[in-house]
Image (cartoon, rainbow, N blue to C red; front, top):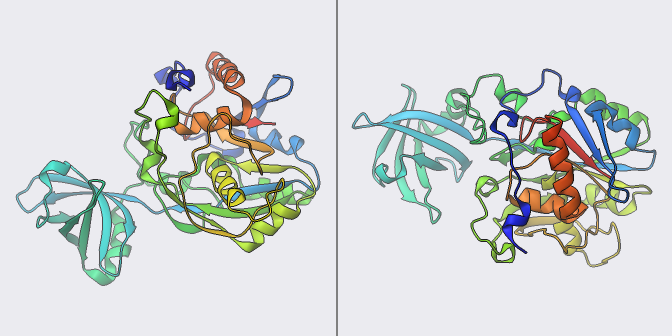
Amino acid sequence: MRLSEFDYVLPTELIAQEPVKEREKSRLLVLHRESGRIEHRTFIDILEYLSPGDLAVFNDTRVTAARLRGRKKTGGVVEALILRRVDSSRWEALVKPGRRVHVGAKLFFGDELEADVVERTPDGGRILEMRPTDKAGELIEKLGETPLPPYITRPSRQSDKERYQTVYARANGSYAAPTAGLHFTPELIAELRRKGVGTAFITLHVGIGTFRPVRVENVLEHEMHSEFVEVGSEAAEAVSEAAGKIFVVGTTTARALESAACASTEGGSHSVDEFHGETDLFIKPGYSFRVVDRLVTNFHLPKSTLLILVSAFAGTDLIRRAYEEAVAQRYRFLSFGDAMLII
């Protein structure tokens, strides 16, 4: 299985730099796996593809990473991407320029927040001791910019703190948004429920590895990054007892549910146990899906693990044809882009 099988030409101008004004007004490409038929719709039309008894499953992770811009004691410019809180005073971060930020350095972010670099992490990050300790979280939220993906080249804005977040985000800890969920509004979710469609929420915290490229030509040699998953008892029960189809919103949700299914003691279709822990599950062509019946997803980068996952679900040739059609029809790609429904 060669990485080149998951490549395609993505014109730069199709990489969405801005979200659509109204979440549910993005475009929706509907891909039928059995017939290969492709439909071009608007995202709100997704209601037509769900029936009473179906279950829609969402990833409720919340983006809490923040980009801080500051300076070193020597006056040099520094940038810190805050990933997570380690304990009451220490935070894990990626810093730029990394080769010039050594253990022992002092960093200043505005006039209110400063940090000592106290440790280097195995993957090249830093542990920062923040001061004032009691207000560090509040100040990071105040001073930090939303860490948009690297292919969004414009500066981040205050409005991104709301728009690069799903409307149902709850569980703090993600580096990036589960972008398939960005198209949903509270009103659309309410319409699903009025139609008799169930809803369930799981958590997968999107890690920094999401944007790291696959560097091996033999896909089977790729080592998947590990991410935290929580499938609670309520969600597990809803999936296991669903009368209809399981509509999974996003590749992160698919990965979380399939991880829980792989750990299930039952092993039947839709059988999911409560699951809490890390997953490094790499879903690639040949994988047998146990939970996912329908998949809502955005359009992904060439040669990415996310594109490999959707190819596993729909078939490599069919996904290639759908992506060629999306490019020809000038769909908007990646995080702020349009959506695909695979049925």
